[in-house]
Length: 269
Image (cartoon, rainbow, N blue to C red; front, side):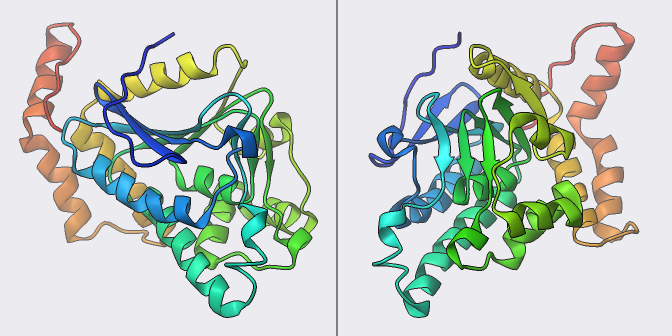
């Protein structure tokens, strides 16, 4: 199993680790199943910005502190204080929206590494990531119907884009929890590993992404985003991404490595 070196700590409840070319955001309230507080939501955009601005980092992993939970939703104790009325809820909702958008719109790829509970706001964060890997203990749910609240359009769209409108309605209207088999079948998660393998396999995949041509990785992520926003034809910008790739050092390295039957050594960061 990989050893990770902690080089930066944001605060007690949310940590940022960097090891080589991989950064990890860690929800660090295992005694509360990593229930997300308002302060934790507010912390996330700054951590994402740090990752985006660090040229040494190529991939972000988001996870809980241990095997007990990814994040079991919002901290229920704040519902009667910060979220007691619409005015307070707006402040709280703005924080969740900024956190979710920060992850969803970052240029570098992100992976949610899910162990056990991934509920409510935790599932919202996982949906904002590009990929979702879970262990066999993963439990998923988005439960506004159990609380009487309404999810944002952007967060709901993330769900619909992944699982389609019918399954999104099943999840949101019923408030039921989904097991791993259901989540994998509808496309809510991408890979399932045993609890013993999940950490090693997630970071192995992340390391593999780091070895790929990063101009390609980020450009393809951006183009997929355009497609999800409804774009169906190339425009000047997407044509420049495509044509400009042929002028990059990594393209020439990739072709040369293929011809020489060796692994490429890409340098774009």
